Each structure stands twice: as C-alpha cells, then as structure tokens.
Amino acid sequence: MSKARITLKGERSKDLDSVVSQILEIAKVLKMKVSGPVHFPRKALKITTRRTPCGDGSDTYEHWEKRISKRLIDIEGDEKNIKQVLRIKVPTDVSVKISLK
Image (cartoon, rainbow, N blue to C red; front, side, top):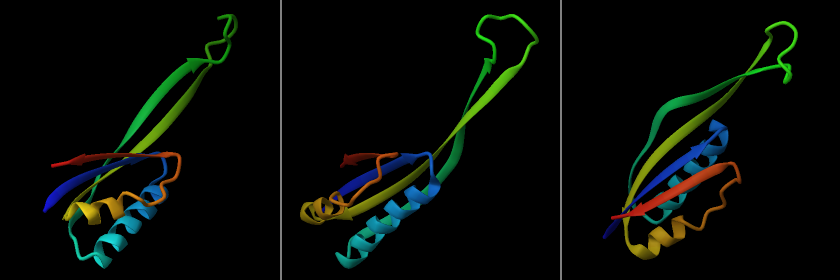
C-alpha cells in the first residue's frame, strides 16, 4: 500500500470542487482509503496601482485582488489504483501537486 497526497490550488472554488468530486468517485469505486478533502482558508493577493502612469493629476488608485483556494486530499491504495486517480481531467486554471509516500 502506498499513500498519495494531492494538493489542489485554483481561483474558482467550483472548479476545485468538481476535481475533488471526480477523485472521490474514482476512489470510492476502487475502494481506496481517502481522508479529506480539507478546505484551507482562501488567500487574497492584493495589488494597488496608480491610474495615471505619468504621475500627473489627482491621486486615483485601482485596486486588484486575486483569490486563491486550496484543497488537500490523502489517498491510500495500490499504485495501480493511484495511477487511475491521476488520469482525471483537470481544468487549466487548477494546479495539481501530487506527492507519493
């Protein structure tokens, strides 16, 4: 038995939840031991810039924000079954990191 830790990051929580549900369905069919998904707090990356590039005029600023959601899943099973889980389709805006133990 080997363990895999899957970390998912993305801007949209709906995309993350769809990938997590696919992983859980495959793990349920293959009768693998799953712990998670663990929802981490959403990180907000904030950027403030001046509207006028030359610096003249009034001080007006634009505020930009990017929110990053994160999920964590641990799976325990045979290597053959873990490879089946890794074949799921992932949207382009979701980042997947897998570490095997």
